Amino acid sequence: MSNGIRIPATNATKPHDAVQSAKSVLTGVHGMGESIRGSFNQAVDTAFGDKTGEVKNEAVTEKGLNEMNDGEYRGHSERVGEKFDGVGNARVV
Image 1 (tube, helix red, strand yellow):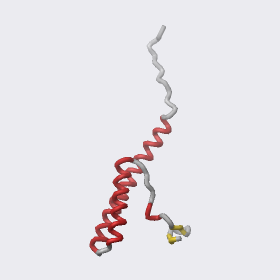
Image 2 (spheres, one colour):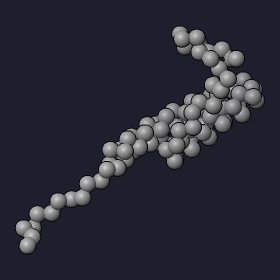
Image 3 (tube, one colour):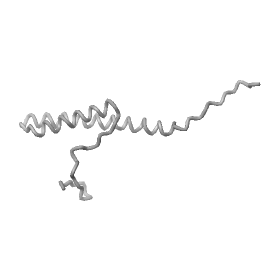
Image 4 (cartoon, helix red, strand yellow):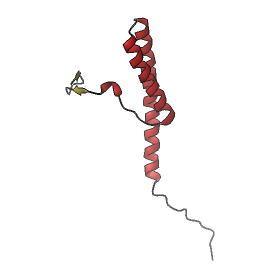
């Protein structure tokens, strides 16, 4: 005989889902920043006639838009091959 009280089933993935949701939101925010940065820098490169910079920053903008749309973090591709000296200064290796 039932007393009308229903105990919901537990879902062990809820904490994991919350973490994934938070990561997705933060990735979208990061993507928005990358998109803005890429667009701005591309405009500067266009104004100064830097074709290499235009292409690079167009890729940054596109990567940012993709991060915003699908929530998948793509990293900082422009930093591949760099090492940091512990003070924030990068050098190519």
